[in-house]
Amino acid sequence: MELTYTTPGLSEEASQKAIEILQGRLSQEQEAALILKHAHWNMKGANFIAIHEMLDPEVDSVLEQADETAERIAQLGGWSDGRADGIIAHRTWDQFSLTGSRDALDYVKALADYYASFVENDRQAIKQLDDLDVVSSNIIQDHVQSLEKFLWFLRAHLN
Image 1 (cartoon, rainbow, N blue to C red):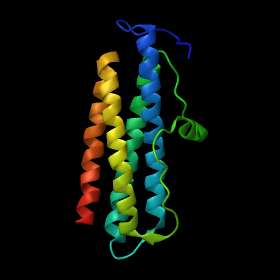
Image 2: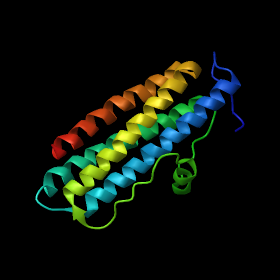
Image 3: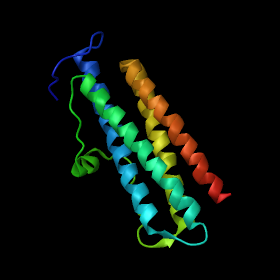
């Protein structure tokens, strides 16, 4: 990717590597919002309302994270791929495969598995970004804190 400019204190190479890592995080953040809405629309059962109402604020949260990640990419002189096929092109994690009208707890279990992977992917990104761009690393660290809290909420429904 040709950069529009470089950020003071960062080399072009470091910026490009950071952008590549951030793009992966952006794609998973966008995908998470879609998956959460999918679960929100398709769950049923005794725990429906509590879980249904818990999901929309998380959609908002991951979309805010995506916005912050995309803006960081722009600050580094790059551009964000926010298209639906861009999510697929940048996916390095397992696809969420639960479909259909299912019990709410089935969706909670699938979302908990997805979020565990999501957190792990963000933590890997943090390790890589620490050596490239501490500001980008700090942004993803803040995201992990929020993701881990939501994962805790999901797991609480399963115990």
